[in-house]
Image: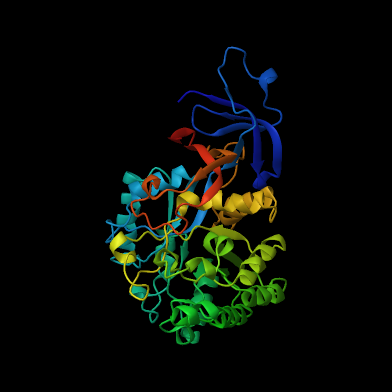
Length: 428
């Protein structure tokens, strides 16, 4: 690999507190050799060719903490190859994959298979999560210690929630003893039973069973109470309501925990569902505009640590049916960055803060050396024209499944190139 020089770029790297016009040098080994304002035309060898980025932005490769991949078992929805291509087109270079596969990622042999497949077929960094309980049944814990030794980055039941409080306390105690990360999808099943959309005016108008915001708050409240006794690494996968934010605000200075939010809940609200748009059937559901605004405020108040795509590809047959029968979830990894940039363009959140929630914060929670432009680290980064306008078109979606919830939406901000270990793997 030849040494690469990028000049005249707006570089943002929250991990190293860099927000400046400068350059980037990539070594022959695909590592970051130099970065920042000290890298300019005057201090690189005159014989070397360089790429003038004319003020475009360089961000560390995005780290997406919540991605569903169909392999093994649901390859017709998504596989490692198609996931990689979709991620790279959106500037994402590292992902945490959920264990909701067939078979479930709950034992060492499946992890070995998954790592081999990821290594052979994926161009991005795959960090697999294993399930909290055997077969996602919410009754028997998986072998945290053995799975962690095999390279499991964290534990979650994906779209399912641990309902049994005694079991959750045992999980937290084991996680504390073994220094494991627990990622909880917060939803009380009794309160959300048969629910499909947010409980409120829209659910009444559409005649659909609602999911009340209290079902999320109750699980968060229970888990944070347990956390007072078992102070393990605990992450709330996605918050969606003002009530949850209020609770998090009360507890954030008392207990150590982290919080994520889906870009869908930051960008859309329940009114976008319109007349039964099944591509907007999500979990957690889209809530009110007041809830959405409270999530944005929570980001600015440092109550939310991470933004995720919640990329959940579904085949067309699972979505183009009646709302009650339709699968839950949306494809979103390739639109994560431009949708997040929308919050910058409309003045809601500063750009530096948004990039922090997409890069250094998730890497810190996961304890991985990604999401930064540190000297000596792998050169995983993306070049972005944050002002480039474009329209989301189903036929141009790279993911194998096209179930985007923002079809025909006008966005501003496009990934021009993505590099992993110094190698250009995507170009517009």
